[in-house]
Amino acid sequence: MENLVEERKKLFQILRDLNLEVNHIKKQINENEEEIKKSCEHDLVIDRTYQAEHTEWICKKCGFNI
Image (cartoon, rainbow, N blue to C red; front, side):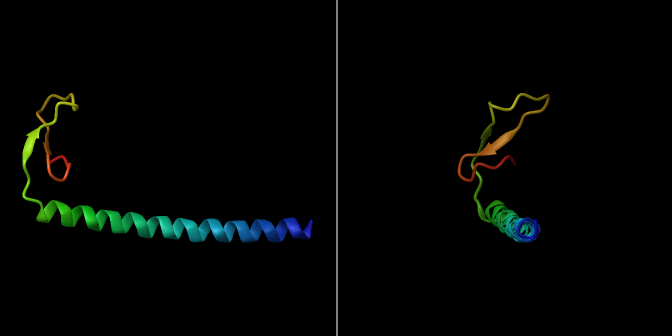
């Protein structure tokens, strides 16, 4: 019983650490995307995969919707 309780505590700690790591990685990805959007000399084309009321544009170089 005690072993299971200790294992549970360790697993929760691992899960907490991994969640912190995921949040850090997400932040890095967002910062990277913002830098790409700022520095890309966008070459826009109509995004034919997006079906909406308004025309959507996508950059051929960076792939972001603008």
